[in-house]
Image (cartoon, rainbow, N blue to C red; front, side, top):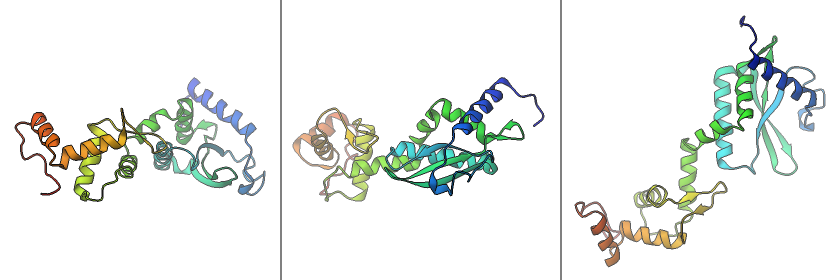
Length: 214
């Protein structure tokens, strides 16, 4: 890297240098001189008390940093009295007087509180699967087949605006249990109300729905 140092790069390096002066090392790491002036810095962290979205955002960031700059990125784990343990990124932000790729990405992450990664986490398969599991846990119906359960979950999430909170609880506009009961009947039931509702909403798709008896 022979280009002139930009103002942005200087600001980022100054920021990391200030953090290094204040860094304290957990005792798990083997003593206060474990990273004595070696240029590494504890940065982004995650612990089990945080949300699934934050957990996946941390994982996505870890995967990306490993891909673009594994020499200057690592993840360490240490015990914590309150939450059991903490996973923390160990970053070498400056090498030979220049900002590393890992350092730049961590700097951007910290500046916007990880917003881009948090938004990306919502689209990750692991997060979508977790959301669906949270919905399934609230459905008390052993008569549904796996296919019907999958269809009901999708219907609740994407048609009924059921929202999975960060702690895994579900929110909807109204009574959740009543909504689940009504929508199960709508999709698979053969009550008069369900038949009338299906006929009204899908008059040209008489074979769209399959009742549990079928």
